[in-house]
Amino acid sequence: MPGKRSGNRTGTRRLTSRDADVGRRVRVLRLERQLSQTEVADHLGVSFQQVQKYENGTNRMSAGRLEQIAELFKIPVATLFAATGKQDENAQPILKLVDSAGALRLLQAYSKLPNAKAKQAFVALAVEMSGGK
Image (tube, rainbow, N blue to C red; front, side):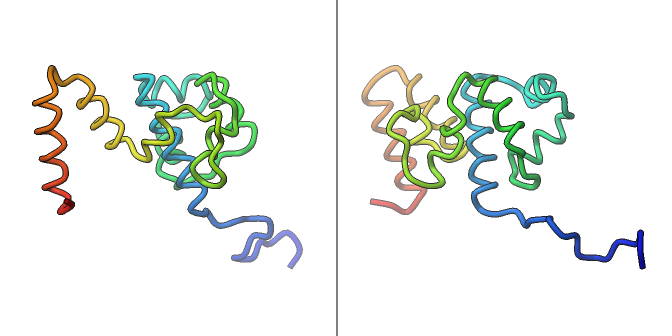
């Protein structure tokens, strides 16, 4: 029937792992710069819930939105994709090491430890907890 929509919307794409990877990168960049989701949302002109959806990979970001985010963080748009494809040699080093907000917090905590002995203990604890060697 004309005017009636079917259950399948043409042009709608499913979210991919790349969408989730880009969202994680946005979260890491936000945390690295100590910005709240509300502050990012205000810059983008969206709600903080929308920023949560972007970061969780629940909602896809448009090209224009990616450009706004890159401007906010003062990075090239390509940096948001660095871990999802070919590594960008110019990407910020922290982004090559960190793939989640938790990993960033661990690195920040490690860097604040007062001495080498404390750092060794921290690493030993993390390795032991992960079951690694």
